[in-house]
Image (cartoon, rainbow, N blue to C red):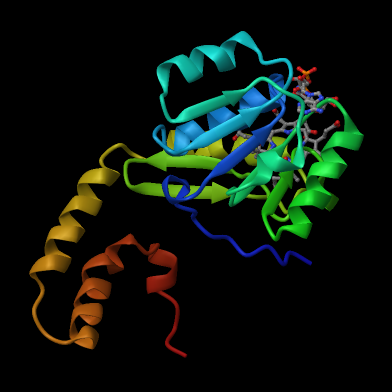
Length: 198
Ligand SMILES: C[C@@]1(CC(=O)O)C2=NC(=C\c3[nH]c(c(CCC(=O)O)c3CC(=O)O)Cc3[nH]c(c(CC(=O)O)c3CCC(=O)O)/C=C3\N/C(=C\2)[C@@H](CCC(=O)O)[C@]3(C)CC(=O)O)/[C@H]1CCC(=O)O
Ligand SMILES: NC(=O)c1ccc[n+]([C@@H]2O[C@H](COP(=O)([O-])OP(=O)(O)OC[C@H]3O[C@@H](n4cnc5c(N)ncnc54)[C@H](O)[C@@H]3O)[C@@H](O)[C@H]2O)c1
């Protein structure tokens, strides 16, 4: 059963810690920066890849700590993503996070994750997060590519127009909702329009 509850997190308002400074650390750091290049992120690892050091040089919001993980690194953190090459360390970080009620993702270890990272499609203000419930991250990646190809760039214009209409609409909540639903009904496929009334 798929029991995942999707939410969109404002990482600008949270303190995120990445544990591990190899390929996985770089991948997760990049995913975070793709969402919000200004979000406060700390990365801790005794060895840190050059690409990560370059990113930290370009982003003052990234703090690097060139040390092995210690529980003290969890102080003040809201969200932790761990992906070192030492399974014992990954497990320890996960347990320390649970003891402190910090949400934790152990990269590539679904059983230890409180949340999964998703494949992300972005067209301006539209953001679609894809998960396969952990069944196939490769499918999630491919499906992202399919959606990126088919979604037109003009989507942003549509969203901007709808925002303008939404801000201009007068009346109570129900009237506004009905009007916005009427305007956007053209988005539904002809199939649903020709369905016989229930
Ligand atoms: C979406 C994405 C986001 C991101 O990571 O940012 C993501 N994995 C991505 C790619 C990817 N990861 C892996 C491959 C190699 C091929 C393959 O194995 O399929 C590829 C494909 C590639 O890179 O081409 C290896 C892998 N991943 C996991 C396991 C362990 C296992 O399944 O048991 C193993 C085996 C490790 C091993 O064998 O040792 C587990 C997870 N990976 C997830 C997310 C979570 C579930 C998401 C969902 O619900 O679908 C979950 C559960 C936890 C987590 O890590 O958060 C990102 C695509 C971003 C994009 O490009 O759009
Ligand atoms: N790279 C991938 O795409 C990939 C895919 C699937 C699985 N994995 C697995 O994920 C793990 C990490 O992969 P990687 O490619 O990033 O490895 P890597 O060797 O490039 O990097 C490992 C990182 O972990 C850090 N580390 C080790 N001990 C630590 C500690 N005590 N505290 C903090 N950091 C510590 C190291 O300093 C280094 O920065 C490996 O076990 C690998 O098998 C990687």
